[in-house]
Image: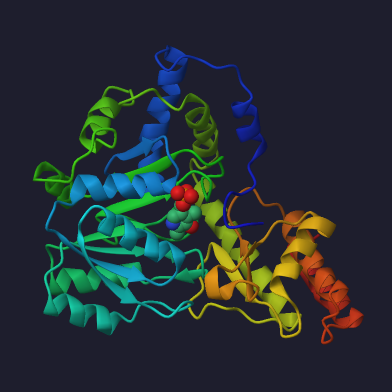
Length: 376
Ligand SMILES: *Cc1c(COP(=O)(O)O)cnc(C)c1O
């Protein structure tokens, strides 16, 4: 139940165990065509979505080197570990970076953003949609509106790795210029495939002077995709597995998936609050929940205990949040019984670790409610 890598549907396991086919065969080309046709829908865009054989950070880097040029300035929302990644990455390529430091667990202060954007001209604003390290949603849509009225030239670059296909985020409607996703989150695949889509404005920026690259050539990737090919060898295994996921998402499939994540989160949050726990984030994301570890319990021990005694994988906190929170993902192939087991194990682990405030009666009552909600 980690916020990625996530559990995968049976169709994905089947696809991954199928015999290897060459990427220039009709069998594979047909799958690639379907995947390239369907991906934009998951992003909420009419622009092409390109696939790269890398983890999500590779697509972030591809976006940086294709759209930015030496001398450009970027304003980075740093609200946790992943915000630092945009900032470090841009600095690594010599981009002049200013960080908006946001207290962990909070959304960016929109007024502060607006003031900074009126004070100084930036080529790009870089943010997460969901800052996974703190399970916090960043107000991307509102940020986009601020950019539109203060500095319409500025590109909005969004790491949507735990937001695409797990939240209502829509690239075109929200006027996002660069949107990145990764396979091991809501796409329900192993790590190793990343996705990036650019708005028309961002494509124009690619035509101008840009940072050096050879491999991360998005223009050539797009040209190859138009011919039902990829620029380099196709990631046949992961794309064949993605084909299965996108088949599941046809019609109402994706909307139902997102709805299930919402229901699951509502039930999970209700249950942990009934157990007497509280949430860490002040602006929770729909794809992941961070729960404060209660006073008197060591969060590192709690996580180890869940893993070793109950074979339940959750994530802890990073840096100063180590031992203070546990993070539970809502993405992936999660069945009713999984979410029930997750709550059951957390309650029992807290009892095992002698959390005083939790009585057997309370645990029984909470679990009974959860079974009712899930109709189990
Ligand atoms: C998982 C994640 C990443 C991706 O990191 P990779 O290990 O490169 O796939 C980036 N940003 C966010 C917000 C994430 O949740």
